[in-house]
Image (cartoon, rainbow, N blue to C red; front, side):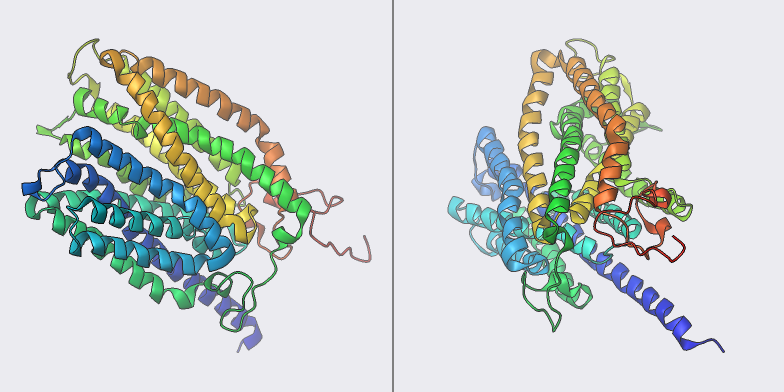
Length: 497
């Protein structure tokens, strides 16, 4: 009969992993419905604004509808900076998420039960939803990270699945909202988005016992008898300064991807090309033009489990690629996708409004490169923030990323307008120049990757007792020379050293 002391730690570790997995699953499930709620509202705003009063709409002009949609998008992407800071310093991440979900539900209730044909009521509802999003969205990644602590491989994999749920919500929300709106009107479409968010709120409340105590309470306060532990990054000024520098440098790489993504998909240019110039005939059936918008989230949903399996296979062999390496690869694939779209655009006849001259397979292939690149860079940078930033600055960083994406989205819409000007005469020029410029910057990052990795490792080493195969560094097995101990780690030398 085996010794109990040999079995108990393994069982405890297994139980802890099951609890972490369940916690991440519940948080990701709630995030699915939050994104379904957000993208449902985004899909409905413009349609609701231009619909006639007798159809239950506001009866505004197209330009007014576009302005309302743009203002709401900027609100939803800008407020997370402010409320991320509040979550970091005053409320706490879990409380911010639950409070945000509750405020979003109140916004949807205002839309459904209130007179949403009244502009004041309509804007009040949008502000409530945007404020709730500002509270919830930047704090969510902090919760995901908290379940795995120093287990970097599982944390990285959790972020990829979390990002997959975001895309499932983004794909599901507007699809169902659009069907409901067509058959039963705007009232019931608004209710659909609210019901999903209510379910997310309930799930988040039920997930509380699984959330680590460090994330459940207010910053600096004891929670359920557990004091708020000291943050080693916040206490080590040199480490914090280096980490902030690394985060800022990698933020530039992230923004290169965001620019490529914005020009490729965010500016609606590829959507217009897909609708007008892609041969959508498949075995005699014409793929609906609206379905082209589902290509990217569908590829992300399909590719994420495959990538997770590949990375797990590499981790078991001690070759899990460092986060910086994943981000560089993601940036390369995304910029190549933009160049590829420019190459496909050369097939479009000059001055022709519509012609099926681009093969569906080639078009989907460009989207596949962009989508896989997105999985390798966007959720990975979320994970990097939770690793390098002090605990009470993480939501602020996440909110800053959202704000930057929102502002860059505005800029790429202008780039897209230039590409489509003069009958689309500048499409090839726009895609090729943007793609090549992005590639040049990413190549510079690839050259600097060893330095970035070594700097991050030196100031953020793996725990001495950690399994190196579960780290997120390709160089984990040879992290630092034995004569050069990592900063912040006390190394005890043996008698024979």
